[in-house]
Structure formats: C-alpha cells, structure tokens
Length: 425
Ligand SMILES: NC(=O)c1ccc[n+]([C@@H]2O[C@H](COP(=O)([O-])OP(=O)(O)OC[C@H]3O[C@@H](n4cnc5c(N)ncnc54)[C@H](O)[C@@H]3O)[C@@H](O)[C@H]2O)c1
Image (tube, rainbow, N blue to C red; front, side, top):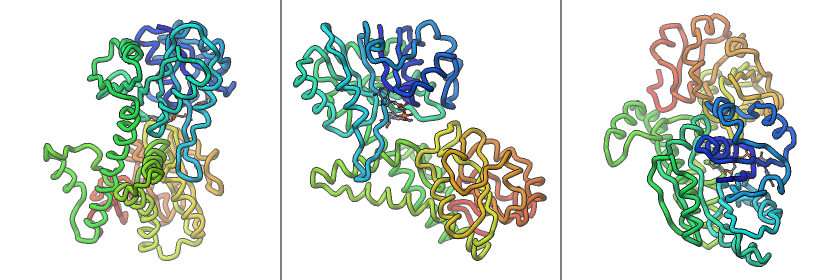
C-alpha cells in the first residue's frame, strides 16, 4: 500500500520506517524542513535503536517531504503522528492534529486517516464530524494507537503485544489490519472511542504500577525492608507479574506524564474525579524530589555543594529529555544553591538545562563532586570505574535513583550509598 505519515518524530519515523520494512511505500511529511533535509541525506534526527539501519535498508520505499500534496498523492492511508502535548489546563493540545485534518486536500477516492497520536476519547468522533462538515465522507477514520516505548520502539513496532484498531467503518479497519500483514500479534478490533481509551488506560495502568512500587519503596526505607527483594517476591505472583515493578525516582518522558494528566482532565471534564490517578501523579512528583532530602541528610545544606547528575534522558536508550526527572532535579538543586554538573551518553543537556554545567564524560562530571546522583539507568554507569570515580570526587557519596549499582561494591570502595527503597546504612 501507499502510506503517508504526518509527523517525523519518535512515533512517525518509527511507524514510517517499519511500514516500509513491511513492504509499503511510505512518504513521511513534517513541517520542520531541517528534519526532512536530514532524513533525505539518510541521517536520523533522533536516537532510536535500529532505526538508522532499517531506514537505510528501506531507502527505496521511503520518501521525505514538507509538502502535504506530495505526501497524500496516491496514498491509501494517512497516518497522523504529530505531537499532542499538554496545555496549561492539562488537556491535550490537539492543534497539530486539527491542522493535519484541515490541510487534507479534497480527494476523490477512498482514503483512511489513521490516528497514531495519543488523543482524548471523543477525538475520533470530533474529527469524523469535521470531515463530514467539509463534505469528505469518502475519508475514513481509524484509531490505531501506538504502544511502542522509546529506546525499543522499532522492536516494539515489529513485535507488538497487540494491534488496536478502532473504526467507524469495518472496511477501513480491514484496510489498517491488512497494512499490518507480516506482524504476528493479536488484533483488537473495536469502536473508535474504546481504542482511544485503551491507549490512555494502558498508560494509566503502567504509571499506577510505577507509583505503587515507589510508595512501597518509600515504606521499605522507613521500615528496613529491601524493595528489590519485595519486587521479586510479588512479581513472581502470576496475578501480579514482574513488569514495571522497579522502584526509582519516578517516571518521565513525553507520554506517561502527559497521558495520565490528559486522562485525569478527560475524567474531570465529564464531572468525574479520578482519585486514584490524581494520587499516582502526585506520588510521582514527590518521588523526583525525595533525592534532595537524601542528599541533604548526608551533606547538610546543598549551598555550594557540587552535585553530579549521571543521566539526563528520561530513560536509557533515548535522547528524549521531555518531562525527564533530571529537569526537576537540576532545577531543585540549583535553587538550593548547589553547583550542578551533568553528563548523558546521548541526550543533549545543553539544549534543555540552563545553569547546569555539561561535562565531557561521566568521570569529568564527577571531578570534585560532593555527590553523584544516578538519574538514568544507562549501562555506562554500571560499567564505570567507580574506584577512579571515587578518587576524583571530593566526597564519596552516591544516591542511586535507579537502584542500578551494587551497594556492597560501592561501600567496599569507601562510598556512602543510598538507593531507593533499599536498606539505609
Ligand atoms: N514518543 C513515544 O514514545 C510515543 C509512544 C506512543 C504514542 N505517542 C504519541 O504519538 C504522538 C507523537 O509523539 P512523538 O513523540 O513522535 O512526538 P514528536 O514531537 O517527536 O514528533 C511530532 C512531529 O510532528 C511534526 N508536526 C507537527 N505538525 C505537523 C503537521 N501539520 N504535519 C506534519 N508534521 C507535523 C513535528 O514537527 C514533529 O516532528 C503524540 O501524540 C504522543 O503522545 C508517543
């Protein structure tokens, strides 16, 4: 089939490149000319495992453009993968989605819009009305939400747990299902609103688990239990399972915070207070800040203390710093008067962090530091020469926000070590 993808971001690029891998002809359209130029040169503007290789392998089936007409020319399907960031109110900002819908030229054949962007329940119905008002009854609409995780997005797209297809018209749903031929996964066929809710509910379930285990971790700290052992013990229960039971300094990224807020607001707008989700969000906010208390307990006032932040991306395997805990941490540390030096293997801290000194390497970040904080669980930090790190630091203190390191090894090297939900010595 011929597919147009609107949006060359994390989701749009992965979708376009993976659909090309499945044998389709794909045109990716973005409004940012630089991104399109980069892609035309064969380079990838984001860090995503396996994406560059897949793009190179499918070059002849991939075109990149800034032009709407060129993108939709001959297309059977138009994927919408533009951003839906939170507005001040917490609701999702759908302006980019509406731009795509309104820019769609009049086409005298069947063509299907497939929504990959995460949107509030009811968006599909609103788009359907808008298309009908424009006399575009020949344009179908399908909700086909994306569940890929940054860092493993290519693998997740090709090997999903399920493909969700919500359609007003069965034939449109059939078309999107055929587009996925070659992918071996259960297909959930449903109405548009349920498909939209599946996406929001899935992310709400995941963040609930994260805040749950973080609260268990906080109680572990207060009572002397070890959250790693507790996670293993409860994860072996088949009714619970082991996924998403890693305690840490909270979730971030472009999806979890925004989608949980959007669902909370969606509920509130219809007069329902989603109390559980409200608590999940608040727990996450507090969790990011607990690191400050841990540092203060060991160092006293943080004024003029030098703190090294190891990792800036919201998780390993990506350069994405949107809503990353590092942003909150850096801001809090600076406002306490600390000097902050940071390093990440791929994320570009200089673009997002003001007042933070960006180091050349992890060891460089640790030079003269009073404490190191593991913010992102990059394997690089596990493999770091901690003996040399200790020699370079002014004070051997590690606050491990991801429980990445072995406390015994660090303590044997003379470090004070504090993880999340681990026994405090
Ligand atoms: N990032 C993820 O892992 C992930 C996973 C699942 C779902 N989602 C959802 O997918 C959507 C996209 O997320 P993302 O992370 O890829 O965002 P992104 O910001 O990386 O990419 C969005 C792209 O859309 C482009 N764009 C804006 N208006 C456009 C237009 N009119 N035509 C063409 N391109 C346009 C932007 O320039 C940008 O390149 C969001 O709704 C997000 O919630 C994201």
